[in-house]
Image 1 (spheres, rainbow, N blue to C red):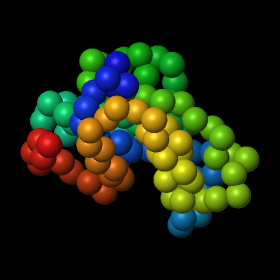
Image 2: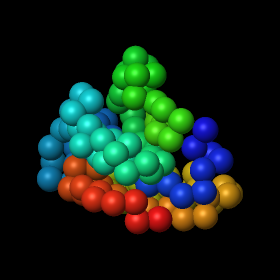
Image 3: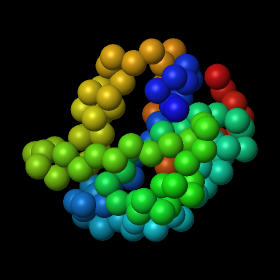
Image 4: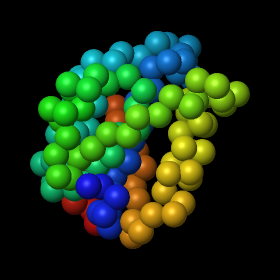
Length: 116
C-alpha cells in the first residue's frame, strides 16, 4: 500500500505518554479527522503512526492512499514523544523508495492543496 507511494504526508498520534504540555491525548478518531480529510480531499497519500486507534477505526479509515502504522516502542524510550517520532520516521523511511516525504502535525496543519 503506502510502501509503494512515491510522495507521502506523514504524521503521528501517540497517547501512551503525556505530550510536551503534560496532557494526555485522546484515542478517538476526531484527533486525526481534519488531517485525514485534507489528505483525501487533495488526493495525497497519508500515513499515521499511532499507538491507540482500534482495529475497527484503522479498517474503516484505511484507503488506497491512507494508512496507519502501529508503534509503541516509544513507551520504553527515554525520549519525549515530540522527539521520539523523528527516530521512528528515520527508522521506518530510511530504506524505502519514497521520493518525497512531508512531515506534519495532525492537529496544527490544514493542507490547502496538493503541494507535490
